[in-house]
Amino acid sequence: MKRSEILIIINLILLLGIAGFSVLVWTSTISSYNIIEQNTLNATFSHDLTGIEDQEEQITRQARDYAWWDDTYRYLRGEYPAYITDNFEGQTLENLNIQLIGYADANGDLFSQTRIHPDSPGIDENTWDTIGPLVITRHETDVTTTLVTLNDTSFLLCGVPMKAATTTSNFM
Image (cartoon, rainbow, N blue to C red; front, side, top):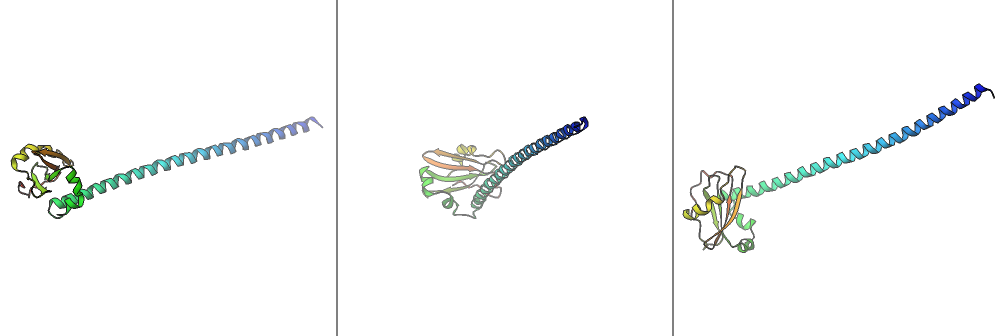
């Protein structure tokens, strides 16, 4: 065998080795990139799905809150007289010893009160002067609720962010 033939064989072996090594490196690199890409896609999908689920939960909570306040608003306008019995179990009010539920508007005026027991005292102007400041709303998105016991009478008072300008005084 001549020297030139030996060099050709060595060059062919080197070229085949380099080509095989290149194919091996390329295959492992592509495989690694595929794994990285799949992990990134999974993480992005998981993050996006969590974000959508969080938004859905927030929207559901807000819709339920608005639905509850829609019922309250209808009650305050006199359109839903069964509101108290539909939304409060009798034992809940009795356990808390609540005898009266009153609502104040954004001006701090008492515009609605419901006696739970017919013989319970209502809120008069002097009593309201004492307990009214506890439920006045400060902003148009505020809702305040407090339970007050005065002279053995428990009042559940709610301050709602609505103007009751058309309502006259509702003292009993």
